[in-house]
Structure formats: structure tokens, C-alpha cells
Length: 334
Length: 183
Image (tube, rainbow over all chains, first blue to last red):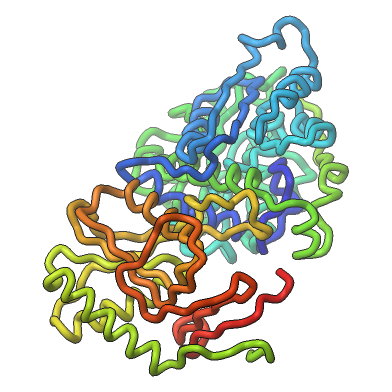
């Protein structure tokens, strides 16, 4: 089943077939980055605008490289150097950008649901590059791509997601997708950083060693110190004593476990340096796959067939997407 | 499934004979297999390229390098297509630099696929020469492109469609011509 959504807002509600189609598309894009001439003319004459209200190096660069490898023009906007500092609202900024007729807007915003808000009001395809503590779909797609390359499958796996679950949009996107694909998820962290609602998507434990037991995949999350308005644990030292992934903890997982991290790593806080650089670590593969994942998303959204043709092909589905695109997990943070 | 408005223009044996002749022509023209490579255009060109490789091996005892090309990303009609084209990827596991590259496709029609394939090929390197094999040339070119080796020239009307069916993908070998339905 092709992926015919108008926007890429999140992976909640995206079907297994759509996810596999996205992953197959991403996989075929990997070869382009290995060529001498790393460019194909696919999105020639298309414009992608990146609107980032939060700091980012990896994600923004990855989107930019992805767009440029497909010959799209890429315009970068960070809130610090734009009219946002003059008090312009998100909707006004986005409307003005949309009036310049871009073919896609990539947005990162500290408020959960900001991309959905724009998607319901603008014609232009919106790509969520991280909204608050809600979703970060392209990160999950690259995670899935990496897992499938290493494990050869995405069903029947045990995946431990460890750390700052409360603030992690990566944890949510990964969990939604892994559930849809038939793998089981374990959330591990201190009680103050776990969300009871997440039981709907996996087991929840506060014991690191129990959490990683027999895991096929370990996804470590960064402790988001900048997002924590108040103290969720006494000290960073104490946190890392209980939740830092060390060789000793890794030994409890399956012998062929892979360890992932969305970056940036707080070395020695959530991930011991020898584990981050060790043989189980696939963190750099994730970064490589990120470009292919974002190429696939931009390609599928910008080359989306016309509405009438989609309906003729598969009934309805996509048309009412914008209205339905309000996040269910609306936690207020900070 | 054989619709009423279909007519078979090549059967399995005819396809086999045409490919055997083309294999000989390719070898004759290139004076052997030195520097020769085959690249099949997805999807049916891939099967035809594999068959040509086997025939060349049977004649000369040499297995020429054979690759697969996906031209989806180079098409000029992406934004016009009704369905989302599936990208399956290019696999050319050898350097095409200074090679005699023989592109293989099933049907030559407007020439736009071949234009896309040429662009894709040039992005991978600089071949010494590019030649084109097609099983069917049905005319109606929209670009100045011609085939070097043709299995069968088939005069058609624009309203007709030509379909190549191959064992590898369709269960049996045949080429049919059909009055195009409403598409």
C-alpha cells in the first residue's frame, strides 16, 4: 500500500503497510548517497522550507542534505534570526512562508501539535521534525530502517526504550511504529520520567537491568536537561548510577543486541562511552540512514498523486487527514 | 488473462530467436566481450538483460557484468503520474567508466525512458559508449533517440498499447498488442 498522506505529522495511526512502503522507499534511496555524484534530479524546481523553533544540527542538516541530493532548493529559517523575535505568531510566519509557494515546510517546534495546527490551516505539505514531547516521525523511520537492516525484520522483536521517556518525542514515534509492526516495547526510566499512559504501547519498568533483559534492540534517550523546568531526579550523578547503559547492563540483553541513540549523546550520563563507541552501537548507521529516510518522506509527500487519483485508487482515507490530525497525546511540558 | 481485444505479436519462440540474434549482433558490433556491460532498465529490461547475458555466455564463455537501473528518480513525468511510482533502486556493482554499456529495455516508444536512463547512467560515470537494445520498437518517438538493436519493429497506433510479458515476472513469454482501454 503506497503512502498517500498529505503531511508527515507523526506515526501514530500509520499502518504497517504504509510504514513498510516508506522503509522500502528509503532503502532504495541509500544508494544515491554512496555515489560519486550524490544527486538525482527528482525534485528539481521544488522548494523545501525548514522552520526551526528549536536548536538542531543533525535533523536540520539531514533534511537539508536529503532535499539537496534530490535537487530541491532548501531554505533555512531559524527562529532566532527571523521575525519570530519581533513577536510574529507561528501561524502568521507560516502563512507568509506558504504564500511564497514552497512545496513542503519542515517544522520543529517546542509545542506539541504545532505541525498539526499548521497542517489544518495551510495547503502546503507539512513535515514534523519534532514537536514538543509528541512525535519525531522521521527519526523513528530511520530507527526502523536501521533495525531492519541489522535484524532483517521488524516483527517479534523486544525493544527497550530507556531514559527520559516523559520528554521524548522519539520514544513516542518509535513506540507507535513498533506496535504497528508487531514488536514489543519496554519503557525504562525513573518513575518521574515515565508516563502511565504509555502502558498502552508497552511494558513499563524502573529497573534498567530488568528492562534490557533479552532485548533485541536498546534505544537510549538523551536526558533533556534543557526541557526540565523542575527536578525530575536529585542529581545527574544519581540518575546515571541507576540508568546509565554500561557494558554490565548490556550483557543482560541478547548477544546480538544493537544499541541506538537519537543524539546528541550525554557521554557518561545515559550512555557509557565504551558502549557508545562499542561493537553493538549502530548510532552512526542511524545518522546515515537519516538522510535516506528524509529523502523518502520528501519524495513521497512532494510527488503525492492528485487527490482525485488517490480516491480512484483506494477509496478515501487521505482527504480528511488534516481534520483528524490532532494529537491524542497532548501533554503539557515545562 | 487474455482480453478479447488483444493480439499476440510474438510468442515465446519468437522472443527467444530475437534475443539470440541480438546477442550475436551485440558481440559482432563490439568485437567480443572486452569492456562490455549490460544494464537492464526496470522492470522487464532487467529480465531481458539477464537473458542476453546468459546467451552471450553460451556463445563466448564470458559472463559480462550486468546491472539494474531504476529510472523513476529521473523521469520527467513524476508530477503527472496518477500512482505513486515505486522506487526500487539502482544496482550497478561495477564501474561503468570507459565501458561499452548496453542498455536493455522491453519497449521503445516515446524515448523518454531512455532519456531518463541516459541521464541516470551519466550520473554514475562516463561510459566510453552507450548502446540500446529493445525487444520492441513501436515508433512514436518524442525525442531524437533510436535503438542500436531491435528484436522486432512493430508499427502501432498511439491508441494501442504494447505489453511484453516474460516468464520471470508474468509466468510466460509473449508480446501482445491491445487497443488501449480508458486509462
